[in-house]
Length: 111
Image (cartoon, rainbow, N blue to C red; front, side, top):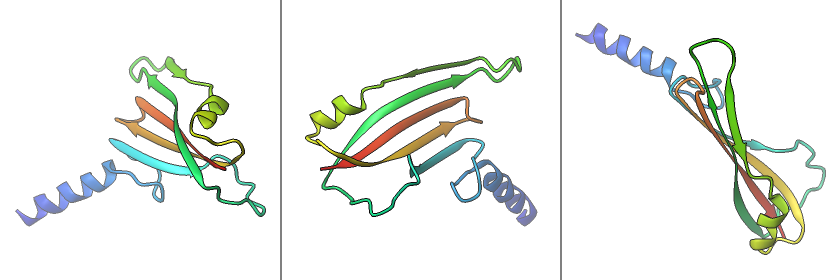
């Protein structure tokens, strides 16, 4: 009985994911900087979120068929949030079931 629980726990750890251990098989949620150039970058006082892209992959055929749609309106979203000067952006990625569905968001920070 205890062996069964240990095996189930090991399987769950293999399927779950975290940004430190790599992508998960069922679910991954990672937030990372959009750029790595932080030389004296001020934080900014305002923030807005832009749903940047959605992606669906077809995993069966092996041809790599992918459908992606996005919104390329960073400046417009920043203006609507009252941000006139963008300081930095973070990219938040959420994926489900072996990366078949992926959703990305840009978190825009500035003044």
